[in-house]
Length: 561
Ligand SMILES: C[S@@+](CC[C@H](N)C(=O)[O-])C[C@H]1O[C@@H](n2cnc3c(N)ncnc32)[C@H](O)[C@@H]1O
Image 1 (cartoon, protein in one colour):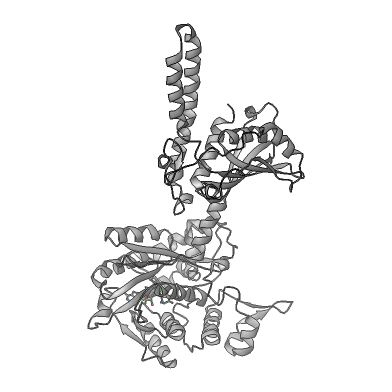
Image 2 (image 1 turned 90 degrees about the vertical axis):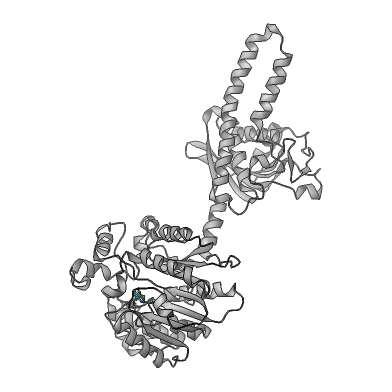
């Protein structure tokens, strides 16, 4: 097998894989490669809002200055494809921002400091949730720079036991520890590489708060080649290089197998190490790692994202202690809130109204809202001709309609005389159609319950949580709707009003303060012209989001009635 470093294709590819994960993930394949992930960088990462200033660094660090070139405007740039440039940048940043002196061989992995810092900050967050923290950690495969122990020790005064399989890395890691006078706090052990943790912990009885690892990423050099050959025009070359050696970047079975090894060993070591973590470079490995955790019945795990520049990597943490609550990343929180605020859109069919315009659609919708007893306040943006309805639903009047109609039908049949047979048949047909649409509604409600947008925010988990008499949380909500309001009239008033002129169609005036607190969902509805059709958009505000889905589904099912 040719050495990876000498294979020109692989070499070319490896000269770009420190930032590999983003390029590899399907998600980022689709994503705009220029999208800056910095906004999702850990909030305490000092590079989040302050990119390194090459000019200042060049003035202070002569070796770094040699790598910087100026454009016509005098702006300093760095050649990210040059290993020397990357090494000098990492050395300068570690010195400038952490007062760490390091040596880095050019033929070994050069750590990108913002990414390494993101991982350390995540560990800090996890430890904050624990009690009785000793500040003792393990770094599996510490590399020549020994970057995690140096950063962790400098920032948090943590102690480290680190392992390394590569002779050169081991020797230089020891040198770096001494250079920074951290030999009392950081120990590196040269290991054979047969195990992930067991060999490192032989003859050691200490307790550790955590272990961390940036595992070797490729299964073999074909793995690296396969990824490279699948590169397409919309997935450009990584903007940075990787100088990792074969031993550093390749492990049997790739990183997933390496992490699985840690998982298997963690079962035996659960009494020694509280939190196990690893970085994950390929997004597709996350489900494999999670499956392994489940297969070993590990009860508590959490993934995170490390975002920086154009690069995204992932982290996984697990523990056998079910009381530990793992922190959620800014990326996860933002994704969740973005999901919550995404509008639901529905294109209103022409057959819904006699005249296909915003006013007529709004009138029709408001009539339906009246039937559903959903409080709404209307305003119109006269410029865009968009009708805005602020909705508050207090009770579920849109589900179980099928059951109610069946009940009505049954009662109707009881009262029908022989002479009305034809009429009865027609009604039955109508019910069948309605039953169909209501069935759709109920199905959609089931889907809503599975939808991730509902997770974690729903108090009432299904339509059946409501009793048939429409009580919510055991409290019967009386009919509070202003029945004097005429939908059409109010809608027409609204249509001629300006944006600020809010017209209450169904008011909540008669609701007690207590009842007003009992709303199911609040949302905004926009009825507007969308190219050659009229769209109805619903934007969630608060309460139970699945109820908003159900209301929209009801409107969809009944707007052409
Ligand atoms: C991707 S590098 C990460 C280096 C460093 N932690 C960093 O983040 O920059 C993986 C490192 O793990 C080492 N390694 C591979 N297998 C190992 C094993 N079983 N035990 C300890 N170290 C190992 C490699 O030599 C290499 O230095």
